[in-house]
Structure formats: structure tokens, C-alpha cells
Length: 137
Image (cartoon, rainbow, N blue to C red; front, side):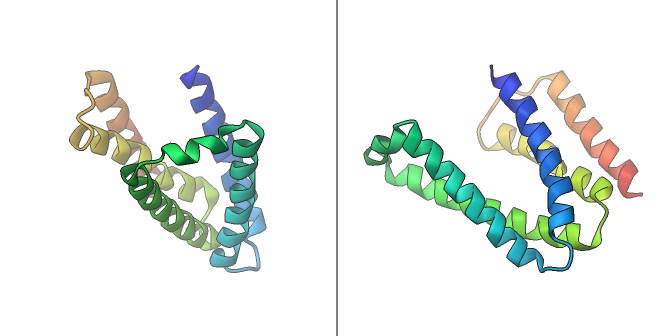
């Protein structure tokens, strides 16, 4: 099932790039990020409320909160820089560079999380990096 969700994530990420490029025209990337963040905030809390998961709040540990806050900061910075890039760059170049995050995440998952690394994952990561270099040049 995770593969299905990952494909949906990719489809919506692609839609995000196109819709964001259209939406950011004539306004600052910071304002665009703030508007998008509000939408995500309402959607996420709506899902939590409708699914009855609000009760899980009391199960949060300090470690959960710390790393989720740090993840939120990283997400916010990513979105801010993404919109700044979209303001002046082509989606066909900005999006692939942004997707270098996949190769970076693979490397960090190996180093920090001690996840296993097999030849397929290494080759896939290198192909992502190679493809991005081709697009940049």
C-alpha cells in the first residue's frame, strides 16, 4: 500500500509545482508560502479531527514534539526557497533540482537512520543526481 501512497504523493507534488508557478505570478514567494501553509494546516487538522486521531495528542513524547518541530522548520524553509526558485525559474528545471531531496534523503537515511543500502537504491540515487546534473547543464 505504501507504493500507492508514494505514487499519489508524486502526482500531487507535480501538480503542486505547476499550480504554484501559476499562483506565485505577481506576488512574493513568502506570501505564496504563507497561503499554501494555511491551506495545508486546515487540511491536516481537518483530517485529524474527522478521523478521531485528536486523542493521540496525549501520547506525544518530548522527542516526538522536538523532531516534528524540527521537521516543520525544515519543511517551511524548503517551501520558502522552492517558491523563491519558482518565481524566476522554469518548473522544468526547479522541480528536478528540488527532487534532489530524494537522493539526499537516501544518503541521510543510510548515515543517520542506519537503513540498509542495496545496489538498486544506490544506482537509483545516482541516476537521480545524474539526471539533475543533465537538466541543470
